[in-house]
Length: 318
Image (cartoon, rainbow, N blue to C red):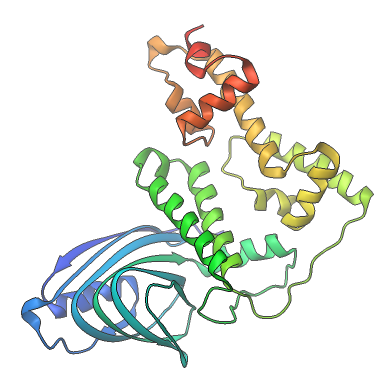
């Protein structure tokens, strides 16, 4: 697997030529048209992440039109303020609704004082997640169009984006591979569920015996790789099942989900670290929680108290 390349692009300018150069750092084949009122023009961009997943905020002050072809990423755009009217391969849209651009598609847009969020997902990452989710190793990711399949799915995507965006603003979270892998998975799955794929991906069916065997292999793999940034998709790939079938295996044999099992195993590992830690040497509850992929201190404390009858801080002080 190719290592992801870091992305960090920050700029604000009133010069349209500089703006074009900056925009092409995000979308290599992008070009704004002539800016009629250069005195009122402003462009800013803040993009962070890596080639697998980067989140951006782009702002255009003034009336601007432009063309681009997206290369090397699936890009979901979420207008937050201002106006936009667009055409993507002949399909039109506009307003505050989110929309999807796919690699190789031609985009034309007209914007008016637009502030827009962007999420760029690497094609290989999205393909790998789609194959895990649908259990089809021959699946190639191509979406049926730029619009969400429903308003409910669009709301689900927005809430996932808000969670991922907030989490990645914390440098302590962004620096932990375990947490970044989970955020990448969340954003990829939300995109796959919000926009319709072309065709009808095959769903693998496993017998009861297969499920029992898959459950045992999955738990063994989780225990062996617990300190690595594995996701449910990684576990599914290891067992040779789709995430849907893997979930059925866990529900039928353990009454839980793969994600729930992974969280409980990591909670147990964090508890063991708390018992072995030395607060006088600088060990903290937060550092141990992050080590095992738990971002929210309150949730960690609640789950730890439920499982062990005391707070993480009390365990650390023992």
